Amino acid sequence: MRHFQHLAILAAVLLTQVFASAQTPPQAKTPPTAPTKSPPQAKIQPKVPAPSKEYVGSTTSIDDAGKKQIKEFINSRMIEIETGSAKNVRQATNDILEVLRLPIATPIFLRVVFDELKPFATTMFAVKEPAKDNLPGKDNVSPSLRASNFFEILRWTRTPGSLDILINQATMSVQHDMTTRIGASRLLADCASSSNMTAPQIDTAARHIREAAEMETSWIVRAHEMQALVAMIVVAQTGKMQPQAEFVRNEFLKVLAIIAGNASKEKDSEQVLALQRGLILLRDMLLKTPQDEKIKMTSAIKVITQSTIVLAKQPPKGDSATETALRKSATGAAQVAISINTLLGDKPPAQSAKTPA
Image 1 (cartoon, rainbow, N blue to C red):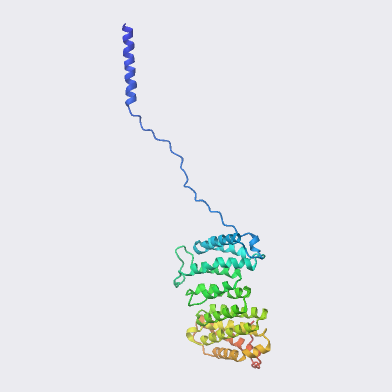
Image 2 (image 1 turned 90 degrees about the horizontal axis):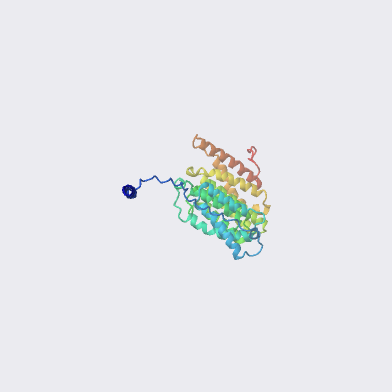
């Protein structure tokens, strides 16, 4: 009996310990460190591919599927040109140019590309304020850099509409930023040479370039505009559009006469740099002009050459490096003017200076 009492006591003690253990809260254990998860990676959007070469080389009207391919490709790259980093702007430009420069690219394809680019001419420039020293924006990409890449693409569409946009952006009353005007004007001649313009389009473009040049203050822009007019003369002559060739020549001479008049004013003395380049263009043009056409221009040309020769004889205005360069340019312009007079039938001076190449 005593044995059973011991067993009962032992069992009671064990049960008490088990119960007490069950009531004691377990000590907090440091949970195992969860593996660090990398933040979710942003999905890299697949690059919109270039249009199928079937459409690039199309000789018939492009269907809706082709237009969709072209639209998606152009829009994806133009978004980068409008908002991307400098690196992305250049890459997007190169992507488009690689397609436009393909030997198989047809006028039909290029026209569809231009139609997709045209709306960006509004969005890119509509909100631009007159630039203050062309300071870059928050993204450190200047508006003129974005514009210059856009202009380069437009030029390679080789369409009259592209030339219209370039002329517009080279016009001071429309585009206040000089750097952007220079960027547009430098492509005018190449675009004019390859745009397959009709006679009315040549007339309109030449008139607009002359109007832009009349109000322009940058001699660089004016020099580019004169180069464009000369390119259009060649286009008209090649296309047997003689009335247009004569019209554009007259517009060119109007611009050159205005520049010659401006160059004699002290505040516009830098225009002599444009004058010299314009006279070289005129001299080279006369070398390829039939005699009967030269006769029609003689009186207008003589006014320009005479004022240029007088300008070179004016006393120096200063001794700075700039003034020295301008005087040198005036002397060079006078030499070209003398050679032009000789081409028009004047007897060359006894001791004329050598005409620059």
